Image (tube, rainbow, N blue to C red; front, side, top):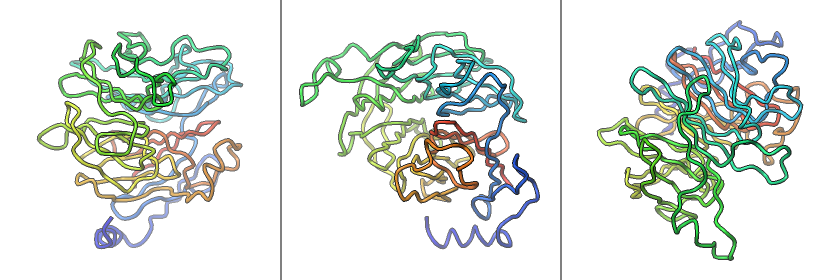
Length: 354
């Protein structure tokens, strides 16, 4: 971010905005950001029923009615196994579903198609030691907002790239993390925890092509964790959160490398509103970029001295106003930002725009 821009934004208000609104503990909610990008951090947003406990909270989206959907792995002590939780805009629990994804819930995307809306779920492969094993794993699912499955893509495409072993002789792995959808309905799936390919399908889940693969050179990826269809310009561009390379990488829709965008710490995924994009950085902060892909703000930066020191700790040890491992984020219709984190007890934070 350019210093002159930061100075301009900071001058838009007379210093930090301090509000009297309190969080659940009775203390004042922290204020993050500055100027035109100032937010009140409301941690532990949403009221879960007593039967359900958060696991790692991985994906979050808002539907056209203002309802918020959270995809999580479900805590080991939870009575309910439902991995999809739906709240109204005020945080009141509405419904839950998705028992078949317990332990492997991951990516989440929502799309309006005609008069209907659909959720696209990207489900991880499970650890072989997981007990019980989830009913569905290593799968991409198209579902209704109430959980009825429309279609699914099970496992990797049947192509040579996955049949050929790695250089060390080990078999290629497949473990999808997230997806994006082109204006024509084509689906791009990031094999973010597997062999680091992008697999493209049409709207009927029929295979088209594969590109990417392990590496750090142009066109190669090192953990393509999140993926987003950038339609801000005249030509749609596929943007990949090339996480272990600490960058974004941009591609044409037929898989040709365009360029890199730097300035991130383990970027996870994307959401866009009015030209601005929110990128959760797993390494302790949430980044906002503008339509020129320049950094506007880093929100809730915890500057971790060691990798994720609080990720497995009790909720009482979390530091208000600081993120631990932001994994998913989305804007709502009013410009607020919802952030979900990769922590064992889960955390949903509403960044209320002020």
